[in-house]
Image (cartoon, rainbow, N blue to C red; front, side, top):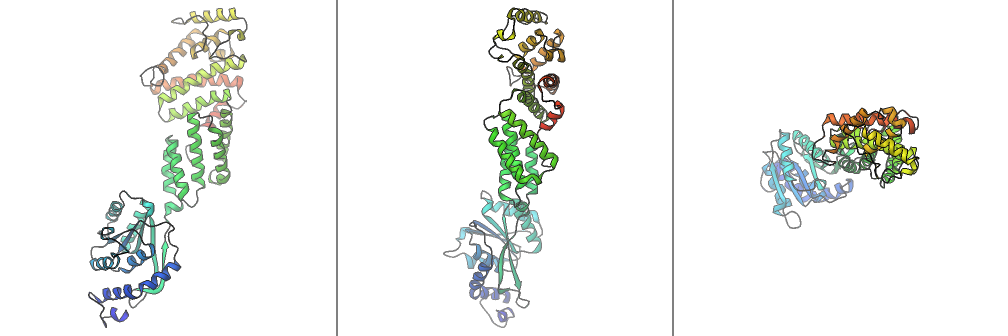
Length: 466
């Protein structure tokens, strides 16, 4: 082969270098492949497409094909390598190897990374990139760098033939070849993918974030952070849906992920997650006070996202829950959805006081005791009972009751209630202010002693993975 390379002997047509390559492929390749296969850690899954860079030398492409045996071969060439393409085609398009339709060669501008990327992406259109490999051995330096960037961007496998070149023939040294699979940095660490998933998480699209984190956790070498964020996204999705039946299992999933990946977050963040899990357990157990707080926290979440119809609905539910749950706590057994007025003591006195407050409003409200309490009925009843929640929030006054009715009326006309109107940010904030005032009064009487503002801040969904 060396004599052929030096022009001292002939082996077919073409330049001495091309004749020497042909001799290598005919007489030395098979043993080189056997030794390379024994020395290499080959991909466990079948390779559908091999994209191989080819400059002046055809040998790396042929050798990589023999090791990987893909179903399809795309040779990316510089524009001055037609002889190498011919040699590869003559060698590999044959019975038991490649069909003509499975062999393609694509010339690119070797100095233009965008041209490289666009051609590779085009060749993979409609195919699963997980079964494709780019081999960068034979390309020029710029070509190889551009192909590596394309592989990392498209999440493709990346290989390289490690070898020693003979200083005389400038061919691969016989028996000193192995195929190396180069790890994709996104597969090793996943920083870019984690950052994109975090943006989805921050947007409140928790199911989409959970799905992204699930994919990342299956690919990267250190999946602890992705697994924890996947569990947290699932918790927040289930929490937003108020899927009480699913909450216990989801809480257990976060606990397991946190125990394995606690080092992935700061102690302060871990403490927030622990506090949220404790609260969600109360919620799953059906604790009425937990629901009162939950509605307000979810309202804050949707208000921050600018989803005012949802936020207004949840602030409305906060107001309603403060009023009706106060009645449940003050009069055990009383059900606002099926009122037993005898549980409130003197029925006639209750009826008279309720009617008096109702007639003081502008316009007057119906004076008869209802069978089921609405939000406004509950406010009138608490005012007529001279209740501490009503006194602390000023709802014993007719004007405050009128204001409450006006504030809640905007929500009643929204598309999520009984109308078709859009809730504005002004109306949402007005309902929030009403809700937080009632929540503070309710919490003073039925809370656990923790500052309610501090509690709500701790229950607000985390915005990052710190």
